[in-house]
Length: 220
Image 1 (cartoon, rainbow, N blue to C red):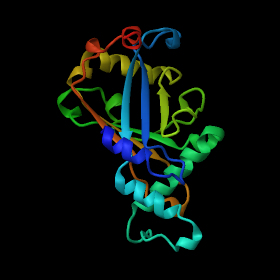
Image 2 (image 1 turned 60 degrees about the horizontal axis):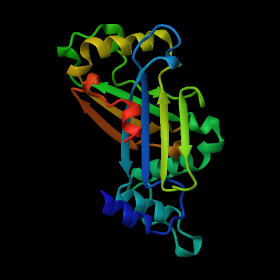
Image 3 (image 1 turned 90 degrees about the vertical axis):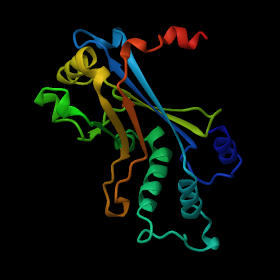
């Protein structure tokens, strides 16, 4: 919503988390050879910060003389997760180990009716850490647009079995799936729990053949 973004941009910030967080997934269309040189399918999701998240950020980043936050952890389980996401946004551009806490959770809701092989279906709902900064995970932040941050997940360097699964799904099943993609920052300390989704998106019966070619999109 443009109005929400405009209002958010007018709010003085004392935190690092962006008002707009973008996640891009680059999926190779074939499993053989150097897939980085082959065509790929790109899925892009845009997430706008909710007002309640912004309010938590205001409170946990308030100056000390303003008193303690009014949303303590025991009353709102989101506080620790919001604090962790803000720390991730602050440290990840210069700290690969912190960036590697980013997790993707794929889930296919209608697996039972699709006849997906067990070696593929067992991965549904299991989190995947994007650990290889500069290989499978790329974080982009432009100083000209400080309220926007993008995390790109590339499946090109993934093991052959993962790319073979993607190829099979694309050819035979992709247009029949109800695919949900969740994104989480991994908690590693007690004070970072519970883990909370920072974004969730769903693809309903996507048709890869209807995707817009990159050269056509960017030349518009």
